[in-house]
Length: 111
Length: 112
Image (cartoon, rainbow over all chains, first blue to last red; front, top):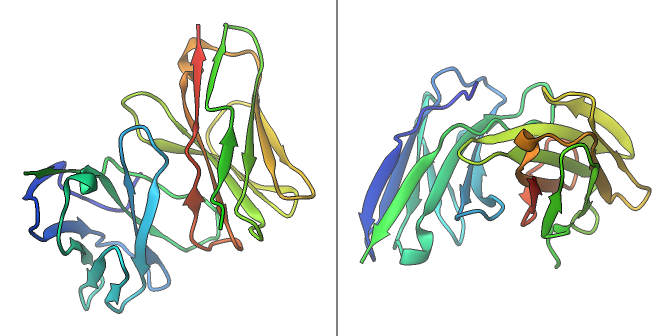
């Protein structure tokens, strides 16, 4: 079972910031939070990951709460091409190699 | 830098046949992972190879098998194909175990 909980779907207006929440209340101290997205029938695309500090790259920002029980992925200026399923994944313990994908959040960016 | 590549893009087989799917990792990556995404279902972990050895296996029957070659490329073999094996098969690679996984475009397998 996935260790994360995400809303099933969200809408965002083009050009506005998209804020995608994720709850991971059972996260362990050495587990990372990863975000991927999957555009229809393509391979998942890595977006960003973090341990406890906020992270930013050219695609997005990741805000992790101080207690690490939740996080938010921020797409600062959403475009129509950002329409996708976004997956929040917690991983790192046991070195199993396995990413557990939940249902993710379907983000629909509207013009 | 080239990403993860997979071949073929599409594969059509009939029940009972065998399918072979191929994956080339990003240059320098030693770990290769396989996932299955059946229609309407989530991604399910299949196999993990590192340095030529199978390191972990998901909850799939033994007719799903694979191997990793000395150049770190990998093959996924599915024997005795069943209709429910129809899915998108995704390969990912990472620089080292537990590092970020980067996915390929997938192979769409259709079993008739």
